[in-house]
Image (cartoon, rainbow, N blue to C red; front, side):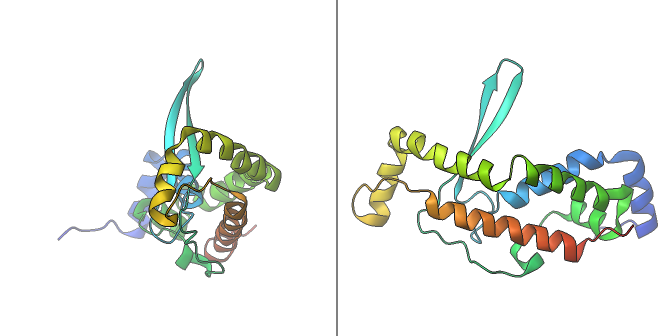
Length: 176
């Protein structure tokens, strides 16, 4: 059986060794990708594109049965298998709460704004349909090839983001 660090020892080590911003950014990325209750990444396709200045992750929502439960409350709707970032947030180790709220606000007003989500989700529809992969996959569920329509995914994505925001505010508030 393993032994866990005391809260004080954990906080001290986190302060010295854990890069807080990348850790909280990874945790938020994982939460945003949890579009369904099935499991993280079950209904998403993630790939990497090489660009001149490095690599960029591309994520496409793709849910054949639109199985996201709407209206789940707080942490029950979040993927809670991330022991390290969760312990950091629970203890507010290395200022992790302030950092995750800062990152969330930054992403919510840029990358995850309503307009950005609409442009991204609807913008991927033509590319996915043109690939033919979705049409082949849809035959299993619909008995024939049905083109992808991502308009419903936008609603579920917005609901997921609202759930994450409520969870951040209720589970890990930042006090001034």
